Length: 263
Image (tube, rainbow, N blue to C red):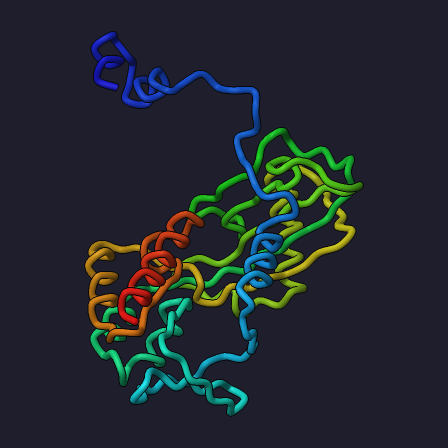
């Protein structure tokens, strides 16, 4: 970048642009064929997990490890535990056994999000882009629009897209009904693209307190969470080192390594 500026680049942006490699012909984005669910299903099948499908409501120390109580009244013994849950869910579970960790996790703020996924006619004339990000303070309700079929490639005889609602500090994603979210989605599409969209099908997915907010000093809070955990207990999740898949996998690897070394 410095060399580009010395050559007379008009701005920092221009200098960065000059330093980029030539654009290739391949797609900008990549994904697994069939989505991440294919990978998750295969990992579950190979792990031979005892898949309880019940929320843990209490964790206690025993002489030989840990005892977990679930919401159905079940009790489970474990030699070690990895808590792969959002920060707000971690706090009540470890307040008694790891108060230092609970105190740090309580200071990591989270936001909620609701995603409206739409299937529309294949001939709906969306522009040739992957989506739109919406700045806060705009008149739109959505914070982002993803033209999924443009981003990942078309499949079948419909186009897929999604709109995300809910920002840090509001409860829109939790309180709005599915009917309201769908109406807002269609209104925003009309405003942004000038299109009257008629969905063939739609689905709403809510992610409550699942979007961590990384403020100043976040790395110190994460270090405090980890340092306060007793041996045999570890954490993983997007609130630690980043919300992206690579960061989440790295956090999980770190948790597993710590558990293996402790056993």
